[in-house]
Amino acid sequence: MAKEKLQVGVIGLGKFGLRFAMHLVELGHDVLGLDNDPAHIKQAQAHLTQVFLADAREKEVLEQTGMAELEYVMVTVGDSISASAMISLFLKELKVPHVWVKANNTDHKKLLDKIGVDRVVIPEDLAARQLADRLTYPGFVDYLPFDQDLVIQELTIDQCTGKTLRQRDLTNHYKIQVIAVRPGTGGPPSFIPNPNQVLASGDILVVIGHRGQLEHFKS
Image (cartoon, rainbow, N blue to C red; front, side, top):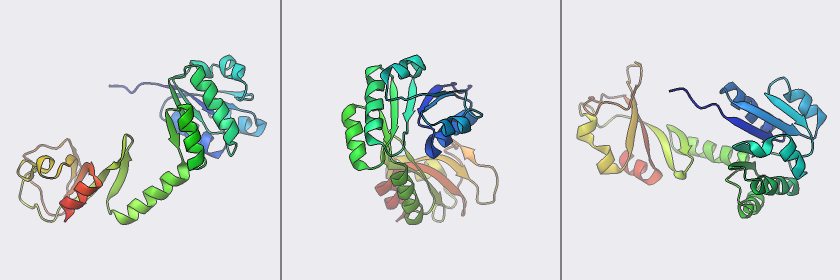
């Protein structure tokens, strides 16, 4: 099934905002950019679907540029907490369904949460946590967005040799779900693996589970 093509607004086309927008374009989505810095607009116009040089702190601008009609809008306006909060408030008043905002720190996040934005991102905190987890939990892949304690991790088989996934019954015994198996021999991975697949030493399981449950399994 083909992925849905989204129309996304990005307000603030500095380093983070432009990279975010360009990645969305690479994924096949339409991106409307807005910034009040001519240099940012010049840099972005070759990459995005449409860009506007305007001040998003004016509610009329959000309406006139079409930002208010989009389903997703990301606000990333640099170090100005007041501008970020004002723009976010206007977008919520204009009934934008999904307002995501880049925050500078936890106090900024608290303010945005009170405004009622749908998601707050602190890139530095996320990057630092992921790096710490990669050092602490070998095989760590990623978090799941709805629960930061629920992670995707790779586990190398060394004690289940000769048994099938059905025999190991990891879901009932450890509350973790196997979503893929990559053979230790280097062959292609199998996604949603057959429960009768026999595991061999060196095979790598890609699993979803809570941290504590994964640690319990590995112990």
